[in-house]
Amino acid sequence: MLLADLVVVSVQVGATRSRTAKIGLLASLLRGLSPEELSIAVPYLSGDLRQGRIGIGGAALRATLGSPAERGVLSLLEVDAAFSELSSMAGAGSAARRMAALAALFGRATEAEQDFLARLLVGELRQGALAGIALEAVAEAFRAPAEEVRRAVMLAGDLAEVARTLRQEGRAGLAHYRLTLLRPLQPMLAQPAEDLPEALERLGEASLEWKLDGARVQVHKDGDQVAVFSRRLNEVTPAVPELVEAVRLLPARQLVLDGELIALQSEGRPHPFQVTMRRFGRKLEVERARASLPLTPFFFDVLHADGIDLLDRPSRERAEILAQLAPGTLVPRIVTADPVQASAFLGEALARGHEGVMAKALDAPYEAGRRGSAWLKVKRPHTLDLVVLAAEWGHGRRAGWLSNLHLGARDPARGFVMLGKTFKGMTDAMLAWQTERFRGIAVATDGHVVHLRPEIVVEIAFSDVQESPQYPAGMALRFARVKRYREDKTAADADSVETVRALLPHPPG
Image 1 (tube, rainbow, N blue to C red):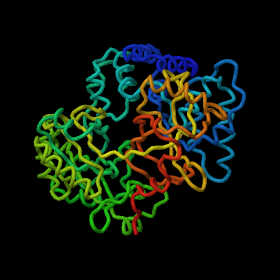
Image 2: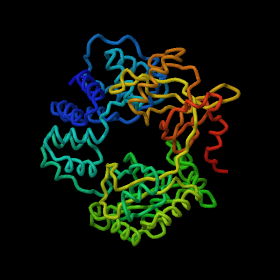
Image 3: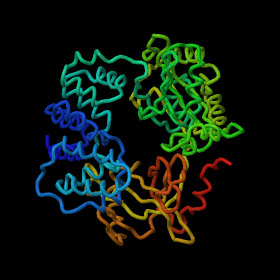
Image 4: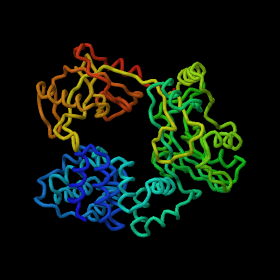
């Protein structure tokens, strides 16, 4: 199949709001692909590369974008081979070779294909084909029940693999998928709740656990063999020897555990997330890092124990089994429906430096790969009043609207400094308003970016601030979303860069 055919469908999917229509468009495309092409197209339609991130940034893309081809000639297999070659380049002179290879690829792409590939490479392909829609499209394409496909993906950890199986074997092929020790499953995910009362109203009596901002890990044990996988299902076993040693000492011979690894300060408070993640650096000397920055495991679920799969057992039963098998390593937890007790539990978690709490339904199975309503996360969000420095023209359903906002804090020395971007939290009415308003204060255009006079203030909610060399302030907001525009404020009323810097977690001493 030509890349051009996939790009046409991607644009169509992004332009429709109907979930049913999106699924139908994707299913029609997938039905005509070979198994090899499915391995490429399924990740693309979910906004991912089969090779993962390959280290191509916006600057490199801008430097290589030349005149587009007049017609689409690139096949999916050719594009995939080019990305595989790019990802394998290393050593002296590799930067120049990567630029040349990238320029050659983009030189054969049409304007629409260049736009698609550029956004795919930098992780900004927002076409409305999220993982859940892509999964249902695979189910429809190959006439399999969505629940059976979802369970197979949970066990395989890869939607493209399941799509290939369906293409080659039909629905019967899904029966091959079982929980297999030392092969990772997709993790169960949570939905946000507005606050704790809402979470309890939705769940009733629930299990409350501290929400830790560490590295999510899935640990498999089969005898003396232990494998540790990240949230993205990459094996990270060599980076965490202390976890491997701790799990080997647990009484069960076979285990699959879900939990968090976190670096703690001497008084038990957590280090910032980015400090914990230093333990997973590529060039790390593990034993030295272990001595200077030890990690502590906290487990909150068990999916298998000594030959018995526990995925379909209710949450309360899994919690009881986990307490027997891994005492001393559990996330702090209570079971309650009492708002007062729940509020005190949340307060303790926050006071100890953690993000908030997780509220979990007691009768829920482990639904890997789903962001279902059985797990709810309750965090105390931060808000800042920031200035909109620029906005980017949207794609797909947001085509024709100025969407992605460039956010800045007030800096007495430099005017305003950028802290990040967000396209989240905007209603259609807000998109229409800001597009018209921004056009009136535009001062320059750089490709798809419209630069603005710094005079509009927007209230931004976010989880926390982290150090980042990507932006001039040396900081970035995590999980930023628009709450509302503050037309009652001027740019002089915006929060200062000093206010933002005060929210940075203290680094280790």
